[in-house]
Image 1 (tube, one colour):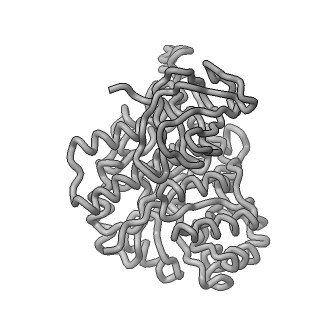
Image 2 (image 1 turned 90 degrees about the horizontal axis):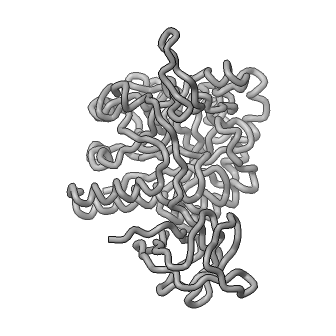
Image 3 (image 1 turned 180 degrees about the vertical axis):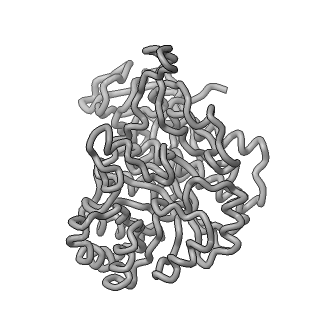
Length: 399
């Protein structure tokens, strides 16, 4: 039985490596052109080639988003770009434009073409249409319930990919123009300003419903589908997709590892107990800083889970990333404040997480420290067990 693919996002080469190390089977990235996340760091051809080489060491794949809705001038150079992607070993391109799909099949036939969620595919008849164009996989719209996904998959002539985690668009499958109106940045040509996530005052006629401490945002809650993963595996979905090419390395590491462990456990045990599912939810909460729900997976969302008066708070769980190791000491690049005597946890890409108490800290000159509170500072910390480069330090939890 072929295992379901875990597909993770990456906004730059560092995050691509992190996603792969922490368990992604494939990573989708955007190039400098033709991508819907122009504010992500994104990859030039040399970076994409390096990502492909790194991925192959882990038997992983690299997909490249070529998913803008192109205006006439946006098509210039796309054929040469697709040929370059094929030449350097990219496994697939993710497209939303029929014209770009046709160009890809003509000039780069070794590339798989995956249809973007931007095309809002919600039924098997539409999938058959895209199959005739040469599409190899379809990413379903995020507005489908589990029942609808199952029925569509049963009749689908192509393998299907389903979003399981991350941001949900305020409009149907990303077809939003709020950014265009608010900032003159075209959301469907790579310029989305995420205006839906801004905070607004809300009025009912003349009555103000918000306060400065509790503002309104148009955005939907994030998607989280831990509980639905077993059913998606059972129904034969080929890929589970995490959203978030703008997300930081710690977020990607935490989310990817949690889903990796859940998927592997389900294949091994053929079930996830309530106790274990609660553990996975607890793990995922360490990475999240926005409200999350099952989106449309459990049916049409009600008002409260999807749009609410709420405030977003930044997570302070993440303390830093291990950038060097010498015997029983690790060199940490600091992100959030911690101190001697704190209980911390190692989020590891190669073993189960472990906790320890920080007993000694030194800066790079060997000066003893009691507190670390300068982001990007590099400090040596004694550690009682083996750790590796790219492991991450976060706050521990006393039992």
